[in-house]
Image 1 (cartoon, rainbow, N blue to C red):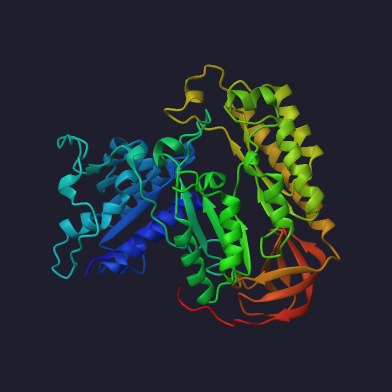
Image 2 (image 1 turned 90 degrees about the vertical axis):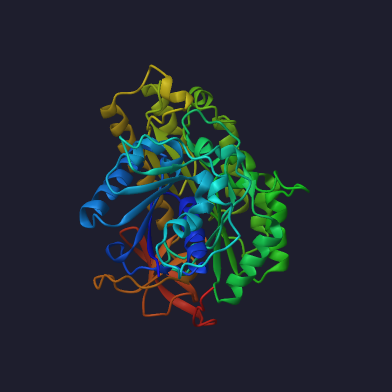
Amino acid sequence: MTTFYIEQFGCRATQADGAALERQLLDRGCTVARGRSQADIVVVNTCTVTASADAQARDAIRKLHAANPHVRVIVTGCYAQRAPEELSELPGVAWVVGNSHKAQIPELLERNSPSPEFPRSDDFLPLSAISPLPLAQSERSAEILVGDIFEQQTLLTTPVFGGEGNHTRPTLKIQDGCNSRCSFCVIPFVRGKSRSLPPDTVIRELQRLTEAGYREMVLSGINLGTYGRDLSPRVEFEELLRRILDETAVERLRVSSIEPMDVTRDLIELFASTARLAQHFHMPLQSGADRILAAMHRWYRAEHYARRVELIRERLPHAAIGADVIAGFPGETEEDHAATLAFIEALPFTYLHVFSYSKRPGTKAAVLSNHVPGAVVKRRARELRALGERKAAAFRQAQLGRELRVLTLHASADDRIVGTPALSTNYLRLLVEGVFPANQWLDVKPSGCKGNSLLGQVSEVDLEPSSLRTA
């Protein structure tokens, strides 16, 4: 019996790909190993959004080989799609499989498995139909399976049960790929064009999760606001949300990230109309300077973004509003950086995700000559993070004394943490006084802060359902 272990890197979309792959392998008779050292096969599911993500994947592969030279390593994901030859030269790598062929990994194992117990299936494209890149055997022994990602039509998906909430809040990827061409971003070239999970499939998956006892689900995608535009008939994201509210018993639905131009007045009104949609908007900003936004090939300017934030705050005064920001994009001056700081300072952001600009091969920004010195990029990133921390602290303080509806999470293994961890609709982490099982609704009044969490006492408890079944 073939045993496998999946080493995950990167965003929720990458994690969703890994979960779908795990489901495929289990359905075909494989077994999950207890750890990477006990596995026959280790699948390294990579990210390539930054140079540091690439380095992290390479380091993990080297460590895997050093710890167990006999393990067969399959490298897949975004880095594998972008630079397969680079990865094939690492020690221990048997196969490099791009996102274009990720669905064929089960058959790859079937073809190479010495065990007759590995069942056959006709569900996957035969490997004879795949055109792998030519191999230079004198230079490497790894086999490369990478094709044109823009020919990819399918969307592998299965709920992800790890990460924040420790199996309490499953994430369902409903969209993949991106049709935009931001000058700094390599993701469209490794994930292909935008494609969507059919709405009936989304409804069915959420119904199954609800029946299994889950109370909050998260919808994710690479460019979630474009959901359904590739389907026939076309479906709008807002239309999908209305169907979910009408046709499922999902108690709380959270949207992971959405581009600012897709946050319309009608969408905000929908969020304001029901407590079943989490009051949480994460909208990538990247810069508060119009000159830099233009160079990034972003489709909005600072005033357009600000209006979206103002509309959210008007209708949902306590909503979480988060943003991604890039420090040190090529050509960014001190004046541009100051404009971004001032823009963020003036708006009611509740948290920031700050990234130092990373040169990505194949992007338009990579060939620019006016790159910002590394020390300057780091200093600007520190200033943005400090501002984000101040914004987050101010938001936590503003919630003291309010009653918050929270979902309990699994307790931490750290004995020093006293109380039950929980998450509010507006994306605040809480430590609730007392011990409560995971996946319960509590009405809590925060009375203080400890680190990045609010401290609160329970005013009301909803203990049904008391446990989760396997979804």
